[in-house]
Length: 371
Image 1 (spheres, rainbow, N blue to C red):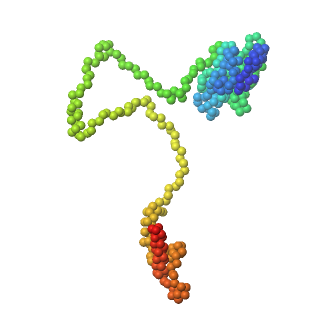
Image 2 (cartoon, one colour; image 1 turned 135 degrees about the vertical axis):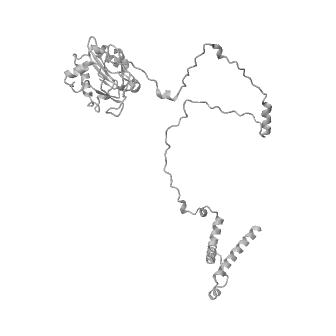
Image 3 (cartoon, rainbow, N blue to C red; image 1 turned 180 degrees about the vertical axis):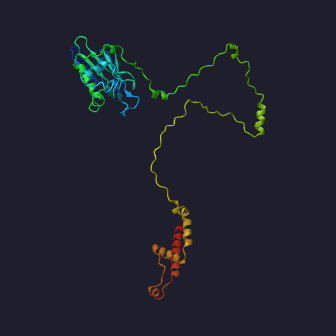
């Protein structure tokens, strides 16, 4: 049993398989979708000798029924050889009263190409794509009666899907064909199986990106070919050039050479505008402007000082001058301590003395700079 091989076999291994089959051995090969291109194996080199090859495709169901994944294709009309049904009834594996034929779940499988001496037993049916293509084939050696089965989906017999539909019955029938020499395909059905030819569909993604203009049909030619000739004489004249120059002068328009007009070619399709929504990032909330005095916030320093001066009264100005004098370390009273205790100076005199001291300092600094 070869189950979904992932690597290539050597010539020695193929020779061993061939001698095993020709000496009466039984071989079951289970494959998967994509064929040799995806799994990187070379099983076709061995089975092509018996008229079988696996395609690099996938089987999907064209309409939804029971299973959400399209590759989990439920095939209800895929038995194309009546010997499978007869064997299931004889072995008491299936009761024909429940339904007319066996239905199986073909999971992630590929189709086969079957030619004589092999016989197609099952197909994809009419609902799946590609339609009516072989999924299972039987081969029996003429002399030693060695048997070979190739099935396109190994996932159908895994633990997850074995009990779905009639997959378990189908697996037992495959083993019966390998073990029971009395189980033989029906020869009448093998001569004319319900199989369609394999039609390759072009790559639609590439074709959609390269649109091609269609060819228009030409008009029918008249019986009298002389009607195709035009007798009107076409000419280029400059007799209106003087009037055009006079019109420029009358309208006071400067004469200029004609500019090159960028041609606009008609395209069969409009410009591509992908239906993509730009990401929306969380932005900061807008400032509550009604709580701000914008004139005050964006005003210059001089205007702010002017407003502050207009708001202050004499007491505020005196306090501002005294605090400024303390910060600058100015001594506003030069009298002895005894006189200060006897006759304290008032606030107005203190402010004047501070301003006097500050102006004196500034004058001294300017004298130094001038020197």
